[in-house]
Amino acid sequence: MKKLLFILLLLTGSWLYGQSVQVVSTSQGPKVRLHGYATYAFADNSVDSYYSTTSYFNGSIEGGFQYGGGLEVMPAPTMGVEFMYLRLDSKAPMYYWDSQLNRENFSDLNMAQNFLFLSFNKYVPVNPKVEPFFGFQVGMDIINVEDPETNREGGVTKFAWGAKLGTHVWLSEKVGLKLQASLLFAVQAFGGGIYFGKGGAGAGVTGFSSYYQFNLGGGLVFNIK
Image 1 (cartoon, rainbow, N blue to C red):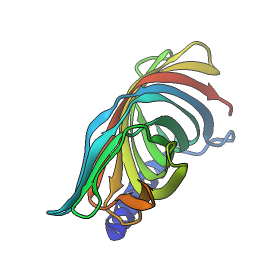
Image 2: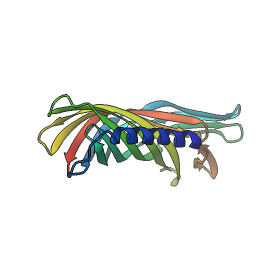
Image 3: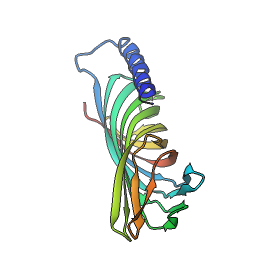
Image 4: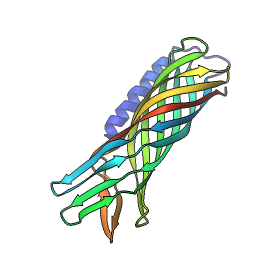
């Protein structure tokens, strides 16, 4: 997977370079934008992993309000590279079964997600006021889970990627309204784990499950240069 990520970044970088060399530099330099995000993340109700025929977990990651921001540099008028941060606090009820542990029902787990993305954005301006866009994101999801019943918690960092589609409606030359839909994926097949349990018995949510969340909302965008 690391090789795949490297190849993906290399191909994306080559495309960006190919686009940028077509742009004639101006005395003002590239544009810089600030983005503010406020979206609703819908639940993924089919999170599961089977370690063996006698050990597995399943559950869901609930939805919630997701917020964040981004700093974007635009080497070309219709192309941008953005560093993004997104935060989501929600619940992750899980059911764990093991032939030795018997059954564990974790119904009140608190889950915090911190997404760090490098986003490659493409703009298709319709007119000075309306600017549709789409983008592809690669990065990581820093996850922390807390079991309030036992006060146990754990964290893990997973590879993540996503795609987004939307439009900017410019209210002025400096400020625009963002309307956006996106789909975020967190891949859980890289080892590591989040461990919690009752009575000293640990259960691990890790291994072979991936999950996705659909986001709908918007935010604001600012031209700062």
